[in-house]
Length: 262
Picture (cartoon, rainbow, N blue to C red):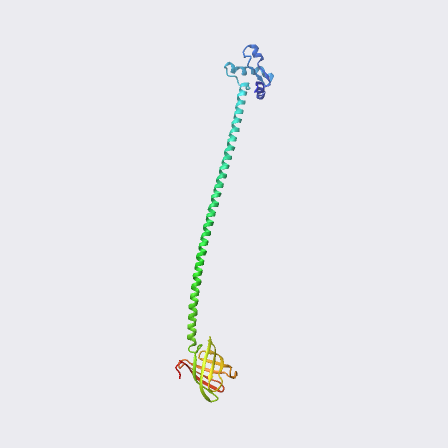
């Protein structure tokens, strides 16, 4: 940078070394500037003293001091600029590192979450398979238990029905209008307490009947082959395995057959 421009940036307006050059105390190659012409003579000694090795008196800055301070300011500005750039670079690097760390953490978190989801799905599948197997086993046990229950119920119902069951045959005597003949009563079916059967006797045409059982009491009415207005009231004697019945003009007494009757 030209010396005149430096002097102007330092605040000096013109040369201040003419008298010193004429007096022979300042080398002609050393120019001196002052900010105000009226102060030229008072500042000459301060400007020349450093050159003569004498400490200058307190007063305005010399051009050399101004140039040195200006260089320091520029150096400080450059240092500040460099430090700002370094700080910005460090901050950017820190931001990028933090960003990459966040990406890594997020990736690891997503991978862990996926692993946990897969593990939960596998456990659920295994649980469902185990549950299905348990359900099948339970259904099988329920079916077996149901069969056992049905069998026990059938045994209990058979015991409750006693001798008056489906397929039982009862033989004895049948009297119609006072005439006594052999008679055979067959129980064709019994469901709970509902029965159907047939009666054969030597005094008339065989007939079918339907009736109900209430304990040891039996009532039935002919459904075919005899007047349906007739109702037989019967009594079952479990001890003797006999049934005695009566209606308006007929009576009968029959015993459970064991197949050995004459």
